Amino acid sequence: QRFEAGLSYYLLVSHDSTGTGQSCIGYDIELKTITDSGKNCSLPIVVPQLPFSEYNTNSCKDDDFDNVGGCNTLYQSGDEVVYTYDSPGNECIAINLTEYAPNSLIGIYIFDRCPELPGVVCLASIGGGGVRYSIDRSYMLDYTIGAPQKLYIVISSQYRLDYHIEISHFNTIGANCASPITVASLPFMENNSTACKYDDFDGRGTCDTIQQQGNEALYVYDSPGNECISIAVTDINIIGTVYLFDRCPEDPAAICIKSGSTVVNQSIKKDYV
Picture 1 (tube, helix red, strand yellow):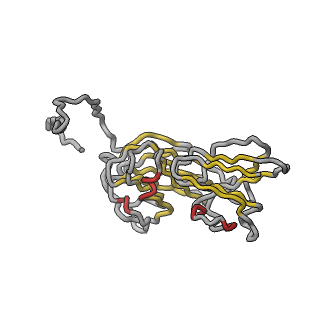
Picture 2 (picture 1 turned 30 degrees about the vertical axis):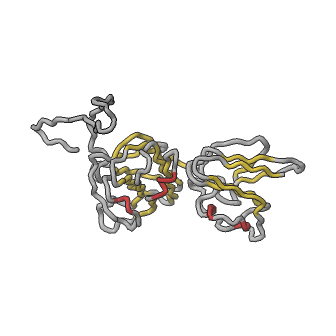
Picture 3 (picture 1 turned 90 degrees about the vertical axis):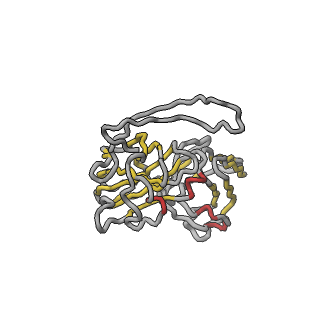
């Protein structure tokens, strides 16, 4: 809420006691000033370098951009926060939003110029029901940049959105069979993401699952034989699947030996002899 100069405002805290029998409630209250930083292209939040992270809100930022750039998502119809980033080029970045309220309706957009300008092009976007299925509330968009370019990154929601944003570089190791992640020996463990890994394998190896339709991370392991290995993928923030192939999935003769899927925020565990 924007306050006008010279006026006194009265804030009333109350509750509905019907059926509870409680005449009073306890609560915490915080009042703070929200700056205009990020309000529009004239006052963007400048990302000086990566990685970049901050807490912010779209509150008081106003709804300046609706259905611009051909992003094809509903969630430009609320207040937006505008970031700018001057990319040196030849990099892949990922924008990750976390710590927002459950069932938030969020849009993340990357534009080639200020969305207020004619001819603006939406380079990448994500928005909609996917947020609803992310139990730990993490929402990510990646984008590969060729030549040096100024990017306009817009965060929007139909309602008030308090969030934490992190913008980071990601490498493309594991993106395909030419540059897989090599498992040199067992045990092997790492924290990773499919961000910037691309969607190279759809419907490969007769695995009979729709979960190959997103970015994939590819690992290769040279087994000495005569062993049983356990594959466990944990801390998945959305629906995920693991596949075991007898060769590179790009090979038309690739056979899917075993696969396993998980619902949100659960683990995938598979054994293979």
